[in-house]
Amino acid sequence: MKKGIHPDYRPVVFRDPGADFAFLTRSTMTSDKTIVWTDGNTYPVVDVDVSSASHPFYTGRSRVLDTAGRVERFNQRYGRT
Image 1 (cartoon, one colour):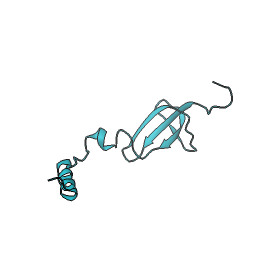
Image 2 (image 1 turned 30 degrees about the vertical axis):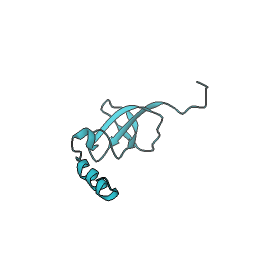
Image 3 (image 1 turned 120 degrees about the vertical axis):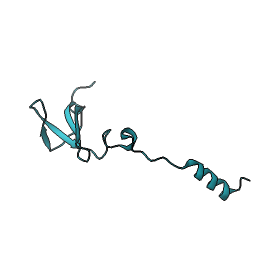
Image 4 (image 1 turned 60 degrees about the horizontal axis):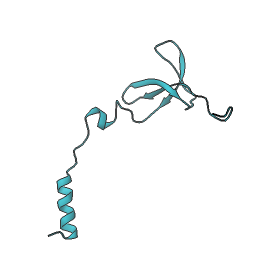
């Protein structure tokens, strides 16, 4: 890597306030907000809208789509007889 052209790669906490879930990882993201983590250190925190704790696919609360009804409706509209 060339020196001086890449952003800093440092520990950052990503937090999902809706699910009360946070995890510490390394990233180039920046934030003005900080949080004291369980190890006693202070890290920048980035709030996210969706995480694995709140996404319907990972939580098992996903909706089942009525694909059979959609196919039948499509065939009625566009003439498969």
